[in-house]
Length: 190
Image (cartoon, one colour):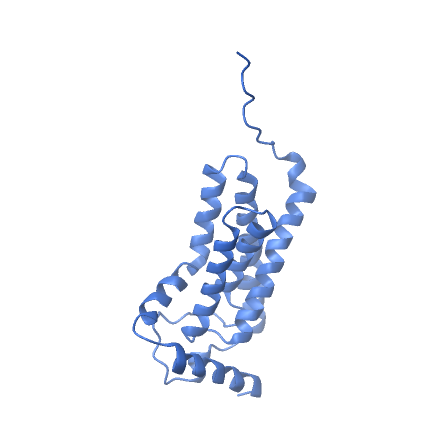
């Protein structure tokens, strides 16, 4: 085992020793499940697209960022790096969630969460700070649950922020001019 992985296991062991308790052991798996397959962020993007008149393009940009995150993080980097999960190195850990089957680096939960949150921050969506707080909680949950190394989470954060930024740039440069502007109906004169 390389020295970086040893040091990172020390961080995870510290979290396990100092943060775990009966309440968090029930709450943290629920928080992390919001990031499973990016489902919370997909639903949020769809809800903005369908119900937030005047901000529908924000919903589409969230979905575009999630697509970029899937391609870069889950389909490319995880397969390229092929990093072992921390629970495979420290087999004494009892997991509170099902064992993930894919590679460890980077964290897909973190990447998807920060891709969506980055779009919402850049677009100045009204719920952006709550979304960012949830992204941070999901990222921390991956460490708490011993399913990712800290560098996996940092890598996922970087990839996610890049994908969110890229979605906004792609939208502004190539799609926005073709997207019908949504103006409120003008008031009638009486």
